[in-house]
Length: 147
Image (tube, rainbow, N blue to C red; front, side, top):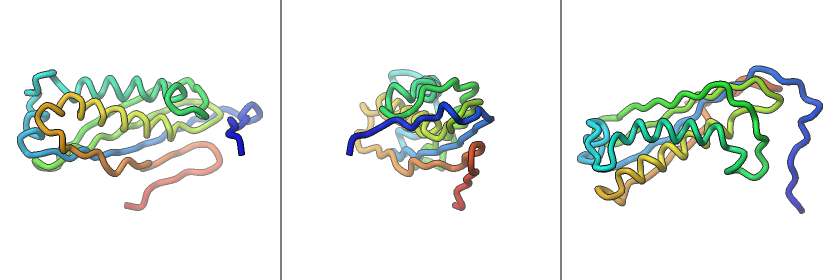
């Protein structure tokens, strides 16, 4: 069966939002370096924040059947879990006829890949896991992950 883009031309624009998260696990030394901004390539969190925002705004370029949409807000935030992992969260908003879940997920994925790129010289065994939609509002239904 061929792939096809969904026709959203009859849908009314409405306020949409989505939150996503992803986890990057690395060795304690590398996590400390990330937290302190001590990587040779510079502040990985600032770079990841910019990359995540760009990914959300350009998701339709990355994912073939996603509609290009006017993202009105993107926030990327970080939380360290001891010296074991970094959690990256995204929050995306738009007023459009389709949701922003893929934009939120893309933001997290690309932000995590950016951190990996900036820290890979120190730890190539880093893992990126648990990419997940946490919440979405707007459109036909709302969703909130239970855990």
